[in-house]
Image 1 (spheres, rainbow, N blue to C red):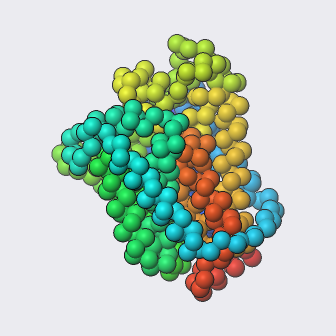
Image 2 (cartoon, helix red, strand yellow):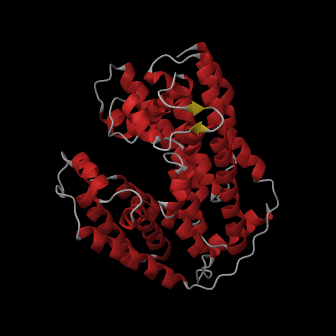
Length: 395
């Protein structure tokens, strides 16, 4: 890595450490943790995995990635009081989400891709077929995206929070079906972590868990470094745990940064992005930088916005995402509703790898937010959670 890269590391990592040290158990803390550890740290330490990076590109990349964290800290100082008027019963919301999930599964089962099945070797064939079977913008496509990324994890979270094994079984059955249908594996991880989150919130050990996660990440990095020092013979840890989370993130972000400074094959400006209505940043990067026209090369919401819609799109992202996260914090403090913690977790992980509008709409965050906003307090509340939320409100 270049000297400029090392300077960026020295200047940025202390701020990231300070940001993570301020985790207190609020919904926005999930974004701080995921974004700092996965998106920012990957670029800081591994940006040269795609090739040598000029110093101006490194500096610009670090600025684009770090500013959202700074804006979030500024917005958290705003005194924002939001009224809470819940009228929907918690059990009714669970039943509604479960019903929607079942309806989506039934309709998708009636129109499966030709290669639907449980094979490991043809999962990418099923994904490509799924794009044609369920075209983007159709009602069923939205339903599938919401069910995989939002509704199934939500039911798993409520299962852990309320010890409702029926909800856990339903969410697990749904993700098995989605794997059969489209070959997607990420929902398995989503529901596992969501169920664990529900248990953690129920026992009020959220803040210690954040530090355990950090320790696990540090151990992972050390294992990979030790493996490299010994010649890189044992690649299991690097290939199955480290690469997808860190190396691929860094490589994709470097592709986007290279696009920003490269001569363009399309009309594009720093202010407004591309004026070509057919331009889709993720597929453009996949085709021209990873040499795969079928590669939907997603990256974090902020880098995607500046690529797709220029500085104006970037400003929209760094305004909306922190404001929404702060709103979740204030609503959680006012209502003690643990579902706001899940929304912070879900949105925090989604914006690390997709556009902020896609995370809100296509992944079901907006729907779940509205349902949570009008939800009655979950009874009986956990005394530990009640005490923790009161302490956070006082702070």
